[in-house]
Image (cartoon, rainbow, N blue to C red; front, side, top):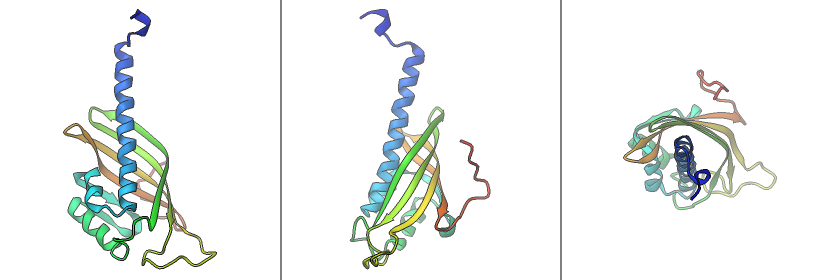
Length: 169
């Protein structure tokens, strides 16, 4: 192996950070997939114990028990109907902020395949529920990335934006 093929310490640090970024992106996708599949027990695995979810008009949900119970109530009519909603995530920005900490932003296109009560969507009616932006912080717990805080900023069809939200990242 030549010296040009050996990674420098700076390159090794960058590779480690890229691995963390990819693990965080996978965590975010697991969140959306398990929410849409209505796998609530598996969904809870993405959250840190004291997680906080700020959902604008739906309020702030603090702690895994509250988050679980609120999802169960929100999806009570569709718990046995996976993929009634489909949370499409795109444009995910992730910045590692320290050892075991990171922040992220990801666009949400929240589409519906049925109404939240399980009934069919009327022909010609929009099947988009929300356009939003997840603003998140992540922590590493026992070697695994978890969502510590999730704030969903809603932009359409209604605007519900946190008072401390900034477009700076």
